[in-house]
Image (tube, rainbow, N blue to C red; front, top):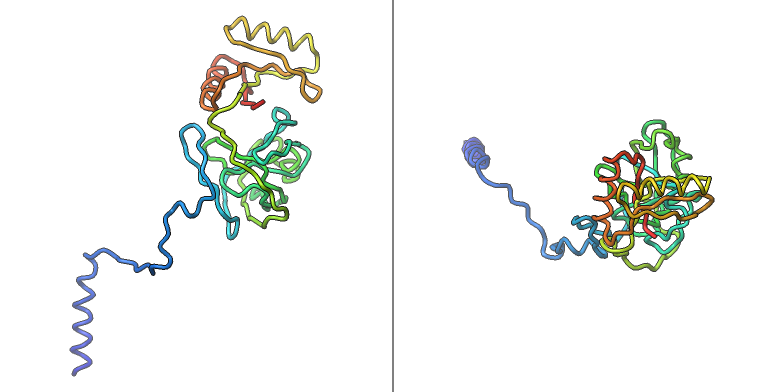
Length: 239
């Protein structure tokens, strides 16, 4: 009888639980401010990014893209020179120097790359692979692929400082030519449309740049404007 009464009381008590908020007790020792997860933060186009203190346990699924000739020879966020023929990548929040395994979920191919740069700052994309890495997992022609990222660790201890992405010297590349005369003809066409253009020889190509502008957000606006005016394939370059 006592057991029956106890069971009925338990049912009545639980019936009232549905209207109450669920409270989870967190031990005092584990209460830490959210900022403790960040080694440092940086801002691009008004959005703040938190660089993780550790790579441990990091797994991510999303869309990968790749970057190549336009950035070949430029300095990366880690201070290294970007080489499109090496297995590297850009990621927004993993510590620089972290090695990650990137699996192309569309064909099963995988590659291990070192994160030595920041990006991609395009909505919906989680990692930018070098030309060589993108080729390894068969996504060059399509340009993007759904991937899974697994952080493996840091084989080398890199000392680095956050790069001020919000300010700098940015250009928008609108064309690249093997022939110098064609590059200058195209530069003249761009100038006729009211833009300040220049030709720079870089890695065997005569590249036509518009700019410079002083912030990444201004470069983004300039790129969108140029795309609307018919300069297809325009992209931002930092020199």
